[in-house]
Length: 530
Image (tube, rainbow, N blue to C red; front, top):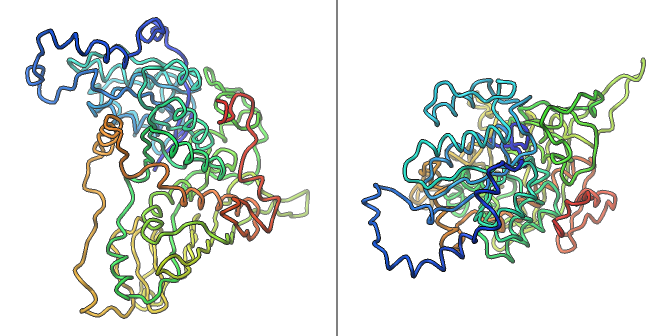
């Protein structure tokens, strides 16, 4: 699971280190120009074979220089394996929070212990309040400590920025960025990076607004940069399921059901009313970025940002990318024509009289959203049903007869003649009932997902940046999934059945809902001008 900006998911921006301008000054020649101009001259000198420098050695000039945007708990967690990839050199970190103060995580020492192991330092401490790591100082310290332990890297230190816009404008020699911020910053920052010619690796979602997500995809398609959307690396395989469906195992496919036990973070039925002081060293204005100003609350940040419509994308944006991307590809799902939301509600007292809270600011505790997809090619119309907050589809009679129930998370394919049940990421599929005969069964394909170490996708990204050849998992490939997760949010926010016209990118039966397809940008944060 992944992600916050100054919280558990990802973090953002960073303040300039005093050494930054000395090591990365505008007075210095751009690295690419320098390499180009000196290549011929360098050939006149003795070339030292790489095997003399050490096995696996990669010259600094051959590394992809990367800025790490977002050093919250999840940002730092995912930074640790990246440090171990010799093809990538982290040269800058960025986050609006300076020190490790007030962070939340899934355990108080999990991240600290992982950092200690990576740095081979049993005494490493996060600083700040001394509890959970996070913040740009922490990120910079980890990067410097790790690279300082390496030999022959040519490492000159990691810069730290508070404001991501300063980083993007000053970092002329940065090849790529990894964006690990809260959801509301993904779209704006990825567009800004791509417009400056930076390759982009980013966590889900592409954006928490539909039209902004479309702009991210359009920018990626019109750019020569490499993009990589991280959920791709965790998707399962649809090969076995598609083979069974094609062989007629469950007849005509009618429905796909996918359910998760998320949210596993606190949800809120009311807007924060307390007004605590902004933590020391935390730039609240920068954390808000494109979103409207409001009073600071710790209940907006860290891991809980994802539960607010303004800052997050809800449980489907958090987990659906890992399970459904492969389904969208295999079934050739495009744009839904209808979105039907069903959500839980909260009742409170107004004096002695109960009333139902009108909540259009936070995702519900539990929900089910049905998407209706039109026929495509040889496939007929399909309904996609997403469940979260403990909701699940009815237990199939085939399981009930065996005294079993559905797991907390899973996926099910329902046809007019049978059902296929699988794990959340389509793992270990089984035919619950159907008409598959031996002559149509074919050879079991098994799982084709996984098999790579957690470092391999990072190595592949670096190789793609060098070659200019896009790998699978680009931003553009996630267009229809991005559309779905954002329409999920709009459906829940309005609590109305929505009819969607993909050509117009518009809700046709509820004009008021269209305002949730985009956002009003604060000055300095419009993706067209940032």
